[in-house]
Length: 122
Image 1 (tube, helix red, strand yellow):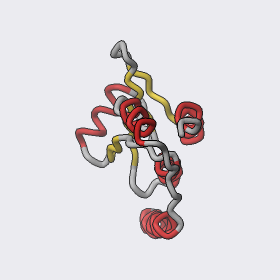
Image 2 (spheres, helix red, strand yellow; image 1 turned 120 degrees about the vertical axis):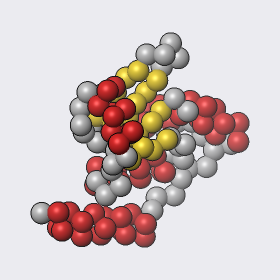
Image 3 (cartoon, helix red, strand yellow; image 1 turned 60 degrees about the vertical axis):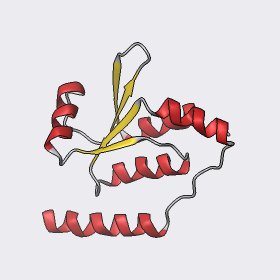
């Protein structure tokens, strides 16, 4: 099973590279505002996971600067398990202004959240 995942994962990464989405263009002051808002976001992911690729493509399409953390690194895996309590990727960590943290799973929910908050800022 691992060899099949490895081959399919590399095919997905290759196709993502070839057909990479173009980011939206914003006025500099709007992009600065978006960058400030996304500073409180972090995505825990695996490079070859197709659902993580889907989220990364949405991040690129929306021209967002969101920190990506690979859960193959033990420190990142520990953070995910300590905070989110689930060993599942992709996971979006949202740190609120008051310091509270929300953990969002499921690629479709993450993309919907990002589009709702950032697609209309041009």
